[in-house]
Picture 1 (tube, one colour):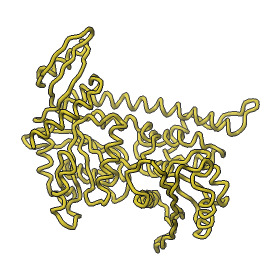
Picture 2 (picture 1 turned 60 degrees about the vertical axis):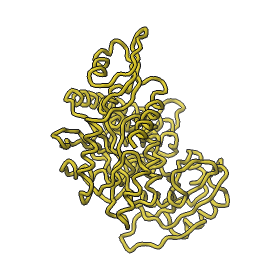
Picture 3 (picture 1 turned 60 degrees about the horizontal axis):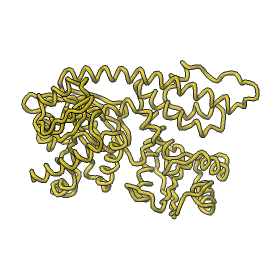
Picture 4 (picture 1 turned 135 degrees about the vertical axis):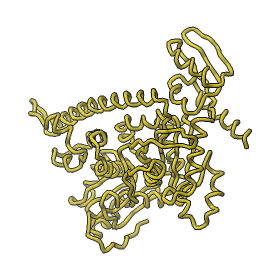
Length: 457
């Protein structure tokens, strides 16, 4: 199936043809059509004009060209007819797929995949030195197995500002019997090693900053959600901040923390984090480890969902899967169903609440529902208790005392080297106990939470 898309009258940008495949048995949060529509938004955010798209249903990806040989020929003809300069695939291509496709298409047509496109957007939106380093690391690790040309090709794609490249030096002299490709790969590995060391310094600084925040006893809330769900607009509303906001994917990349006043003169530190997306590149998850730890170390997650989006539930599930991937699915969470003002029928928001746990309908841009949301945040941080089962080493005496002082202890069992405690603790303390959760404790916690939720209902 293929179609051409009418062109806008705006200044012409690089022209791209999109390709998507539906693989039999492969789980996807979005349909093929919706996923391609999202890819088109990503392309637009990257500054590319989409001139057409092609899709195919497959039992399995073709070993050489991902899509079938017949589709490759059809793609070649359509790309040439629409004067496309780049072809973008909706999935991550293997280095072999990319090489064979570039051979099969016209010499002037580049082949990119969804991962490369997202990396390019991140490179455009990273403004802090940390963000630039993280993007640069992800780009180099992505490009290393795909490197087939000299440095000029990489320099055009790498958008992290060149800081690490400049400080680590360029390509060295060739050794006996070494090809230029081997020299380039060795230089990139050197750059990767250098950037990782720089990011270790950033991570150490973050750890010191987090320890300082914990000593202040002010609980932390991490805003999470699908990209463009309205997280930055929400933090601007509740913290009276001025975080950059734009109606595009991944408008905010670098995390921002603001102090928020809750009802009853209580306080919380709220961090706006990078938006998630389906098929989030694994290279990005690894490179943004330090930033994503802001989520896994939070006392409460505030999941912002664009309730006006037709795929709101699928986007919610994609975020939940990513939270599980970064080991943050055990943290207490409330859901803000944002953009309720954009619904055709306002009562639809209330009808949808039952589909999301601990949720409230809001409009961050208009301020609707914000007071109720702040009350819910306060209740979760300062009043609600979370079931937990931990095995604490005796060396963690401070945590053992904290459990007894602020928690509700049901079972205590002393063992060699430590103590097993089961009970309930304030939700804001859960992250401190996370390293010592008992095996299968996450499943136990979710079960106990479901039981407690059913009792309240």
